Image 1 (cartoon, rainbow, N blue to C red):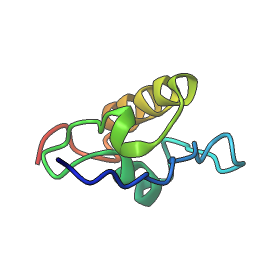
Image 2 (cartoon, rainbow, N blue to C red):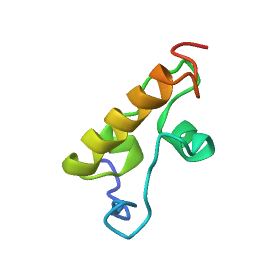
Image 3 (tube, helix red, strand yellow):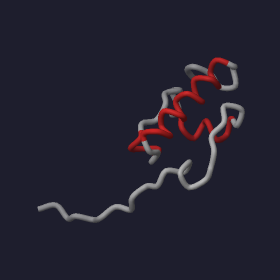
Length: 71
């Protein structure tokens, strides 16, 4: 039988007061993996509303060439 260890629930960083902007490259790179893909909600800990916001900002940063589409 597996041992059950309750995990600490991730809280949405944007709901806590932090913001994500497409011009802030170090912050945007936290939400993108090493291949350039946007990380899912279960890894970022963002709520669904803010995950859509993150995706929009990452796509804007790619379009404006602040980050690469693929690495």
